[in-house]
Image 1 (cartoon, rainbow over the protein chains, first blue to last red):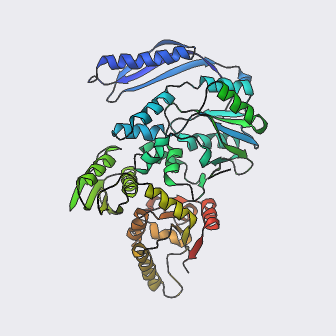
Image 2 (cartoon, rainbow over the protein chains, first blue to last red; image 1 turned 90 degrees about the horizontal axis):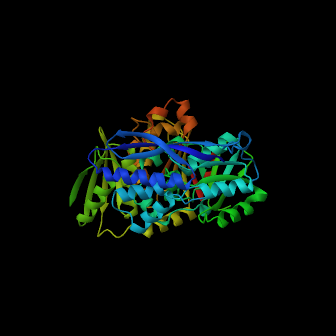
Image 3 (cartoon, chains in turn green, red; image 1 turned 90 degrees about the vertical axis):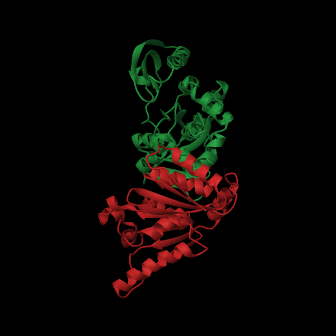
Length: 257
Length: 202
């Protein structure tokens, strides 16, 4: 983390049974976002596949001394998450035709929002460690950060930003398979307080598409980071937990801190 | 009225959609959903719970049959479920089972008693919130054990079944765990400390 993107290559998989205009719209959306990020699309690959898939391979620049890795968190840091959780559950419900339109619209807006402003806020303030939340879910990426940094972390369920619809949909069983795989992988690594409800656990394991940044910031800079994020329009950012000394890689989820 | 939904071979979230549709269509009665994987099983159980329906799981050769009992018109996914969670949080009752034999004496009798105890837990009104299996207790959740079906019924009724991972390793049973969630001493100790009441099987 902490770099600037320069060039991007499209990688698209697309079935022959869907209209080619749809692929055009996907590529245009990608190109718009790459331009917004200040980079260029330099080409790409398209493959025939049963389900549409799209991604980018990005090359960028960062000074070797200024790379922000996931291994720098220290006891006394605070943890900040910049986007709400629950995209996987809401998209699963959308596939089933069981998600409210406004819930889907909220998720789409969040997924289409770059992490650029959040990254710049973090660079301006100076932080210890950072990772982005994607397929391994909030707890999966938090575990990677805690293990790489050799620290223990505590998060407060009440403070974690969630899309409002995600809890209800999780309760109804619209939980993607990936959330169960994440839960299985993290068995024994996460300790939940007993009063943390099942649907909250599901959201914390839920794989995210285009999720936010999880930032570990020195305790005395926490307020400054939140203020800088707010100033740059990253309105979903919340303080979600803290880094403590203890068993490396161990995660505790408590109702409140 | 009884309706069977064959959701085998369907990808998530189809099993949930098909089950929900069937539950909406029948009056009172039972919907039996057939699924062939754990994700579908757990998601359909969540649906049943959110609708306030009682459900039990029967293991089959090709997966699971989930029997969901609907008593009256299905209301919208219920905040009642939420309430239940809150109440439960206020009075966690844990049954700690550190052995596969109930009580001291003849081993054979102890095994029978344990089987009866777990079966009886599935029948009583005030079920515990959590059952913790530790040391020899983990054998009760291993494939082939006669207690598996009772533990499955408890799990389906919303009782959390925690199984000690270290103990599974020790007895070489990790691969044959048939029911419950693998857990660790940290979680188990925390649960015991925060419980309202812990009942230890002798």
